[in-house]
Length: 226
Image 1 (tube, rainbow, N blue to C red):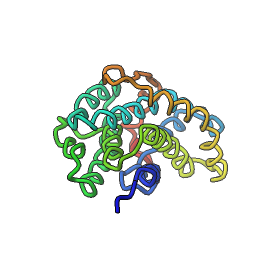
Image 2: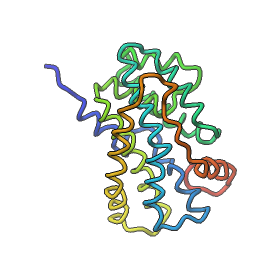
Image 3: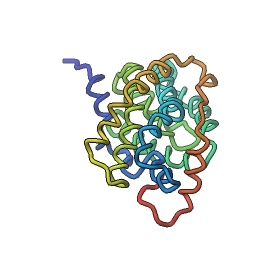
Image 4: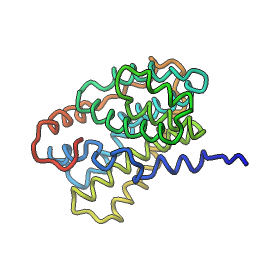
């Protein structure tokens, strides 16, 4: 009997226990706090990411999911556009670490899927958004599901890191996540509206996040790699 795994897959990709290495990342929160971001501004930091880098990544995941339905090699074009939107080496390296974890998961569980096999054609390790979209394709998810899961993953990465970096009540951190819902859902709508041409991916930037990633990369005392 065929079972639709899309809904379950959406929960899987939103699960912080997914073996992708996300536990080693703070989505830039650690260097932001080191640079003086007060705990009370973490919700603003979350919103800023949802409007910029997280939206770009969710759009890329949606586009990957859409294009690999008919062209498994489409990940190459999406990856190229993503690399152009990640100007710093630390950001690229962090995305590659997460992407490799997702690619490994996809290879182990859905190795025969054309889109999963297509990851092997990339000239560099898969970035998180392209690997995210490929996994979504293998599971059979909808575009809104993969967009929401990608954006949620970004928010939950920040809030989970906050619990390790700040004297914050877990209930407050959960409140930050829930408070992000309006911006997150608006970003879902924007991501799903992405054009089929990879060159049309949004290019919203967060220069301070990139600079903080560069600063963090040379620190010898840190909890997270990014």
